[in-house]
Length: 197
Image (cartoon, rainbow, N blue to C red):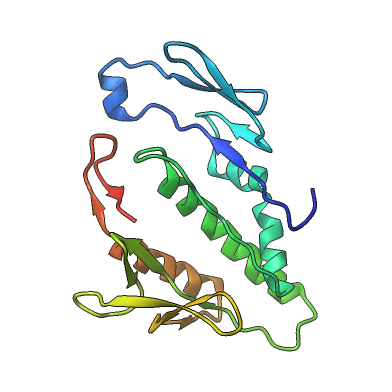
């Protein structure tokens, strides 16, 4: 797969505690890197680089996504993105929270192993909720709504977004923990503490 390709990995979560208590049965299954959904009729969706079933671990997700190569891309000066998509309660936060710490470790390892004259790593952490952009690393109470602007060089920037220098992997992981604690969460029928961003 080319280094600049999009790699789509489907992860099927296990039944949650409430679903188990109600005696519900799983209707989504993995089959040969396809997703099968049982309803009034069975539908199969393919085109995934990998499909991970309910027993998949965070290490399985890390390996299947090729996330280690993203760290090298960043150290080579290119962009890399991990995106989780799905309905409420589908496991996006759980997956990303498990994926990012080893990506951080791989990024610092790649930076240390490279022949870079100077490497500086910093973190930002923002949340978009109800069309409001919030800085999750700023100490503002209540959090300010930040503006997103197109830059003259192309791309976008978030005006006033704080940036925290992270000389070591643990500092970056601390930013993750602080930001995660400040995210907006609320109970839903699918999840007692669902991220709202």
